[in-house]
Length: 205
Image 1: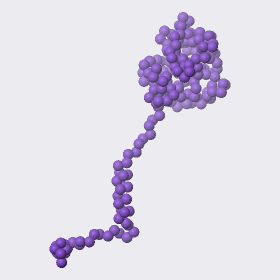
Image 2 (image 1 turned 90 degrees about the vertical axis):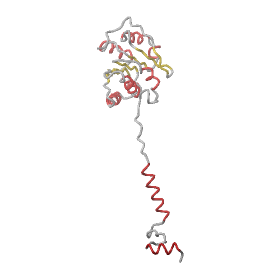
Image 3 (image 1 turned 45 degrees about the vertical axis):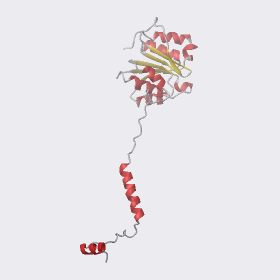
Image 4 (image 1 turned 60 degrees about the vertical axis):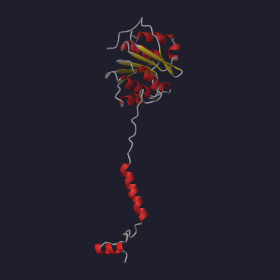
């Protein structure tokens, strides 16, 4: 009898390797252990929070980068699109102020645009309480001049609105004050515009 076998027999140990239980193969046992180890180290990634502002990398990030240094208390959008720009703008400006009034002039569904009620609800869902002036640009600006006065920031989504209509440009000057910022979009690029304030209205409180 070999010495190792004799030594094991004296200690009461067996030299045979334990057999796997019935129905279980060594390969299956190894795979199960590997799968358990993999699951224990797997990290679940949280979906990124959607942002519309300057850090969102969306279609309005260029505009929002130009607004990030502004501190305003009132905003007027002339042409609202689908509403995402309003959300992006307010998200950016709210970094400097907790209370910003939002106004908008647009023909909405009357010219095939976004539905007024849907637009209003979309903004309300983002804690924005809009004051809307549906109708033509001239009419909306006149209503703002008579009821609101001047505003701190004016965003004109289509430069043709003022380029081809001197009356709109004149009314725009009436709702501007010395510190009003006016940005106009032409060829999908936003640029600041100088506006005369000779016939300005009272500033919104």
